[in-house]
Image 1: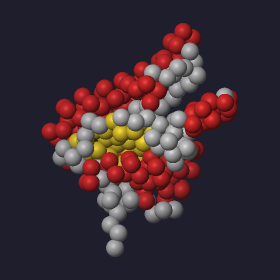
Image 2: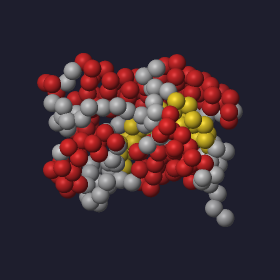
Image 3: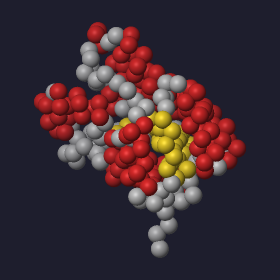
Image 4: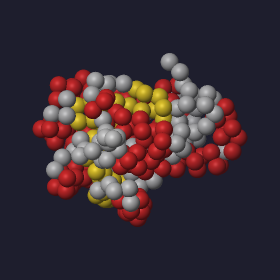
Length: 254
């Protein structure tokens, strides 16, 4: 009989109402996790919760903005109030303005990307830390990007944000390992809503992008990205921390 890897575990997913975030939530639910979905658009979160509930998962919806520290604190508090614990934190939410040359990046572009991603990731990590410390265990999965690792053109603010998140994650892995908390980063090749909009506006980029992926396709948010996140949140990954894991079909190879 198959034992679900995340049975009785509780996971917070930021940006969980659509795209990669929803795919991750579906993968976690399939493995038995109870879920806390947060994001800026309540209607999207509610639709996602209905889909997840149909799988038998318990779901709490908490509308909020990662840029607001108080929203992060409130999300964790409500998660503990409802479920009694927080075992995993997946910092997926990220706003961006792709395709903007560095010389044209505005302060608004920079602030929006940095605050939603790097600041938001820090806000939720700090909010979840006390609960994870008290439990003696926790798993945090953050998101980096090939755009930062390789310095891709047109992604200045996004690349800087994602490299900041990777640095933050390594520091947290070293500082929080003594509490039994793992912190890892995934760099995915999957279509986010922002990436999809960019590729629709620049169709020539889609073919070029796919030609760089050894497996010749984009990653599936649930099957490819979500299952990797589920593994990192499970007890099977207790000895993996501080790592950047590319889940990109061979687009980048070390």
